[in-house]
Image (cartoon, rainbow, N blue to C red):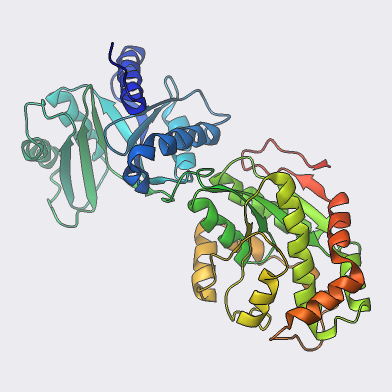
Length: 424
């Protein structure tokens, strides 16, 4: 007896599921069609990426009506919510746009493979529209009696006759897409751009140092987009500052949780450690010594979390402490790799991305950042590693980092709204 490969077995199960779905739903059902990006280029490993993506899709749909998910053709995923209202399916589509690995999200009508039904659905889709249109057809099932151009021409003529809209094949204001699948046809108009990238969790786990400013949330988002599942570590200035920075970090992580689901935020009160550094005579090295201690603490936590890297929002030359010499001194403080996805970006680019993913307005809220506490009048721009090690030797920095973790707090800021803070 022949043994099927994993992709063949997966396609067999999906074909069987498609037959069951046809009997479970009526015509003209609204569902979500998603188009994938670089996942389709992963060759023999593609099934692993798709399995991770499907798990992430299900996690993002948590709390909604039950969904049914199938793969259709190359780089296409259909998510159905049988029996749900159009409003519920629209909410599902809104969540799907935030799933990493998805390039486009479309609300589509699932129509029988009948020319009259397809034509009527397309005509109805443009009933309240004005401006130019074009019909673009694609046949994944070549057995369909009309070619793609014939189908587009037939439907386009019917739309023009019904609504009198002008045709613009190059830059239509209202593009209508028709995709002929094996067992049904999908008709849709508008699309929502997705996040692209790779499914979260496919590249491992990392720990993000979340400051509460503009940069670190963007660094986290960019690493999620490359397939990293991230946890967050925030250092507050408590007991010498209020809780405002914690509220900001919590809000930022909650906003970012829409892209990965299941985020964890660890908060460490750092004020007393900063005071110890100042008392040790750090002076101009205060900022870099603080950052090194933060990284040592983060590395100890990352070891507990099985994280393989640290992530920061450093951008070269953006502030006086972010020089090549100082970044090199920071790298020296830990053995884990420090990922800096913003290293070559300028502030305008970073702010544009923060605005796009919804973190800018939160980051701009006022708070007292722990890094501004006890800041020296002048900051060292070319820190010497031996000098920093000498300060750490006086403080026993490794032991201090371990102590800081004993007073950490764990929060679970969920974008889906079912989280509560907990102490560990």
